[in-house]
Image (cartoon, rainbow, N blue to C red; front, side, top):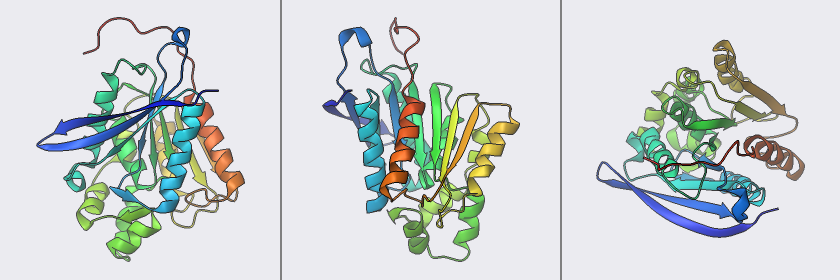
Length: 257
């Protein structure tokens, strides 16, 4: 098994702002080549303690299994260009020499699933996509009519989220974007999720299925929105690690551009 050998920080300039990223690289032997990498999209600039803990455990488990994990801090203009920030980080990862550009995965959690699904429609460089406790835009718009921005943000795992940020997400088209490219897609949702009804995950599942693309969908028994309980969280993380821990088909050669 691997463990964290180095944490690298990087930044990407985007329209006058800066998106700051962080990459945890596992220890690998020279003959193993560069590792796969998973970009974690959590959505709002600040997430709740429960969401932060879940994502940190996912990242740690990926690295332990030999898969690099990347995260980022949205730019100051993130409330107006959430997908642009994620796309900039994805492009920066694809240019790196210390990860395998043929094995780039993306995971979106809760509100971040909207961003991840939209990002998946922008790039064919994403090898695998996972949506975890995914919120749909229909549900987001519906709840915005009955809840304040702060209450809705808290329900969906955000420490805070501006009205502009929620409005931007509500205007995106993730259910359409996720259909653009055929790639292995995993959708996991807690069967006991009360923040986002499990049926919401069927919207994404059906979109991918109707497009004739590869899809795996699972409801995890007893799991809530953040997979809080130890056994169900372990089940969730093990499933995610197996999904993203794919062997390299062949070494990458040639320059990156």
